[in-house]
Length: 315
Ligand code: AVI
Image (tube, rainbow, N blue to C red):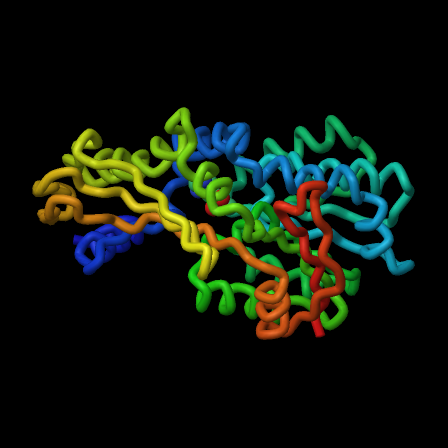
């Protein structure tokens, strides 16, 4: 039987001790919709905070990016480009010499984005690129020698384990030229109650977002997870800055994944680790930049100092 990567990862994660699932699998069609809803929740401050940075500091972004020559914005995981469009419109209006390369694994996402950006900013030079981030950056490196400014927004780096964040950022660095920039979004350490509320919203959307991975496993691996037997339990550790989400088995049970002939036993109150969303302070941001071949040029903050967009230069 040849297993898909999804099947292999799920089998491995649920056979581990402690059990774990990867949050990268949250994003099927239903998961994408739930994440859109999360971003509009009152408790989920991250998206609004980063949008506030873009709205209030667009002039500063342009001063930093425009060093006289042409530049290229390469957005890794562009999604709907909602926040980025604020900068693109401003830069275009100021007559900056730049182009926009949204990068995403999904060609569908890119088609929608291109249509929507062209309708709003018809004069913008846009070159969508479908594929793996590193491959796209490696191709661009040898294309023409415009200054690249890679964007990795939305606190996505917070979903990486520390060693994997270091590997990921080092790979980005090695696919950029000296002097190129990376604009990277970090959610900052703050009142633990506010952080926990963002991952435990009162409407239960974040719970549904986590539970949806069990539904996805049921659908794709012919599983029989009973969702009512699990509860969503996020915790925040102010020492490490890690908000960690778990699904907890409310009773002892077996779950069958028929497509891969696998039976998983759960003890009562046994957790499945689902996701880490790490919160940073400024010294950690600087240490991460320095350990991956960058230096911090400037940190830009929203009005409440909840979030930082950190601008790094390849050294
Ligand atoms: C995509 N990522 C930055 C989100 C976060 O805040 O860690 C995913 C998320 N998980 C629960 N709510 C939002």
